[in-house]
Image 1 (cartoon, rainbow, N blue to C red):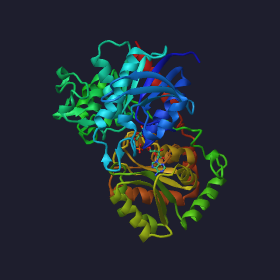
Image 2: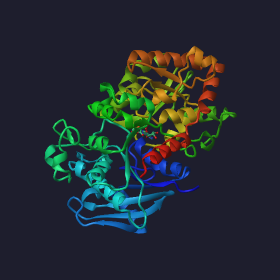
Image 3: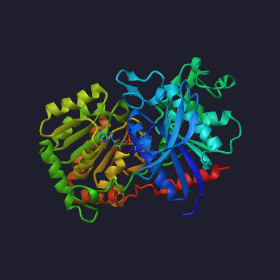
Image 4: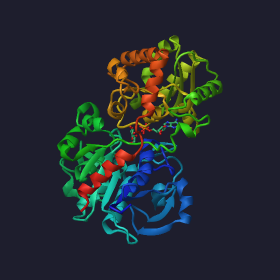
Length: 476
Ligand code: ADP
Ligand code: GLC
């Protein structure tokens, strides 16, 4: 494949190094997906404490004597086929805890920690390093939001920039008094550029300075311009509508493959799915005559978890069962644990993060629930499609873009892939779950929907081509 260009991706998470959500999956998948269409991508991210052991095998390619209060070094190496650049700045990243928070909650200097990442990203993009200079800087979410801004404020750099919004709920807010500390130009502190409700937002800074803005589904791109979804930034995004686009995420079809599960199966040989189902039912002590639904998610307000308490009892009464794997908000953990306590034998809950178990659940479940209030793209409904684990989703963002509702017309045309409900409330979810019970009871139709789902293309090919076209349009 002929090299069409180079991209420096700047992000706070990347599979397999560190992950708190789908952002990491996407950042980790893009390099291989883009290589297939001729774009070379390198990923710059912080060397958090757990990643520092890897530095020994890497090469130092960049040095900052004063990176926001200490030295910063960038080390280059390869991890799982990904060309990784780790920013080692112990005063910012060598800490006990997660990427954004420690035992006492969010790190108080998060604005500075990720401004530093963005600062280095912009500098490396502008100057190049070791004979490598990108054509495009691709920043992800608020953590990299200042990167396009530093690039723009520094004058012509010969590097174009893209900002991708994975989740607008996190905006990288900082007080106006942080302006100097974050090395931002005072003259840009006005509503058209840096000022955001009296303070600063790294996400807004990226939105107003990047050459292109993308988000992870076409529907979410449109939703973001409306107050219900824009979370304060709707005006900023609408003002730049001409450069905003939605490109769906893909999933790694090598990792997420029913043919690679404990009891393998495929669209033409579905028998193994029943065996996987029997295994997880035995593992969780469940006996479920109707559809076995699964839910694998962060347990947060975004994900609509609070809607389960009012709707699952009827679903259980109709013969259904549920396994929840997730962690997050203690109140929501309590709510799902309450369901388990009241419906033993039909509801099982595992609080925690467990990749291997999530695979077994997709292999063995009949349906996957994704009742999100908003969902930029969502990955689990796509795992569901791939595994014939019929998605039951709210009609928002990427969920609406990837699942075709089992309406009579869609069933007749053999294109239905799941159940889609709207609005996002208990009444509509309850109705969707009744629809699930009925669909499951009609065995021939159910098998057809599973087939339709499994035949959907959920890999990265189409999205990689869309990113390549986007880069090509702005590379200088
Ligand atoms: P978000 O990024 O908003 O959390 P996505 O659907 O894009 O939502 O991505 C979530 C990713 O995290 C998926 O790969 C999902 O399987 C995974 N995941 C979430 N919670 C868990 C868990 N408790 N155990 C295993 N995997 C999980
Ligand atoms: C965010 C969104 C999710 C999306 C993921 C990757 O975490 O909540 O919908 O799939 O980013 O883009």
